[in-house]
Image (cartoon, rainbow, N blue to C red; front, side, top):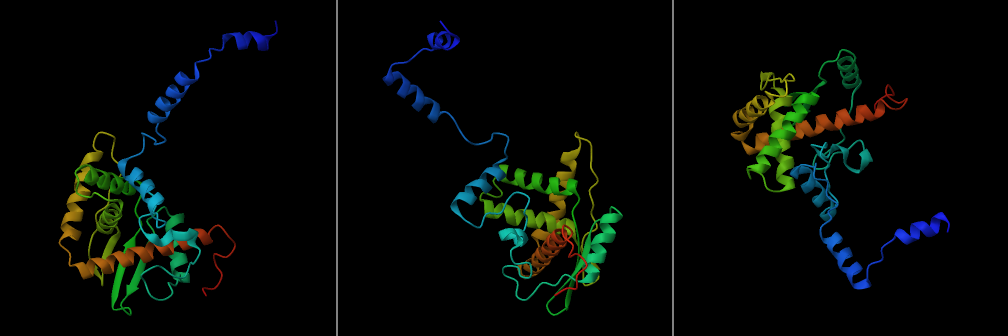
Length: 234
């Protein structure tokens, strides 16, 4: 008797009826979901199935939609978004000196000037954690609400000045694992003080400044991967 025959002798065949029941049981009790994913991630994936306007976890704004297929326009913002040579110089200087990237975003025909800085990786983690906790507390219930909440927390950190007047100078350095909740609580307090009481029109304005900032950052980051970084701006 060869090895194949010996292996066949060890196989136990269930009656067809029992095999069908076992198959149904396995299907009913098996989930494709990753239990390590947060509720925000799961809501995002559900939204992706229901709506083509899916915004991934690391995409706070819609600057990266369609793989940056149109790098001159941003939904809901009229006109071409220009990335200037000054923007590129500021970006390169910040990256080489390990400093936050800062852009000055001009709105309303240059009547409103918003100074915006990039988040650190730790600050971005705090933003996600704050929104996750808000979801756990039922402060936000839908994925779209979570995205707005992400933007509000980001605005509290990233908006530095509006027309030369200080808006926020708060920064968060990475803490040890035992004290990170203090930073999350402080971020929530900062957002409550700076954003929640803000007039709706002004909030829309600064969120648009953030969207333009993220758009510019994404475009420059993409151009860094090619030989077109210093080409004249169209």
